[in-house]
Amino acid sequence: MLDLQQLETFRVLASTRHFTSAAVQLGYCQSTVTVHIKALEHQLGVILFERFRFSKNVVLTEAGRRTLEYAERFLALAEETQAAVRGVRKKDDPTDSR
Image (tube, rainbow, N blue to C red; front, side):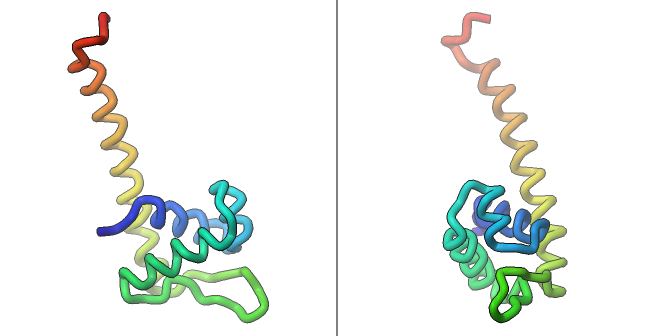
């Protein structure tokens, strides 16, 4: 099962192309970004980023570009689901006096 936090980390790293910048944007330490990306790569069985020796800069591989398309759709759907459920939950809440 794909993990939403790992997918969000992947999306931000794809945008920033830099581990430290992604960590700052997400409010994580840099090692957490590394762990998320390695776990996602392991789960998918592909390398998502080309890494450069002595640099924290990365570039998406072909598999990474393809994964990014799906990650963005999956994350958007997750956000849409949360918004839809919030509306239903408020209507169904017997403690809500509205």
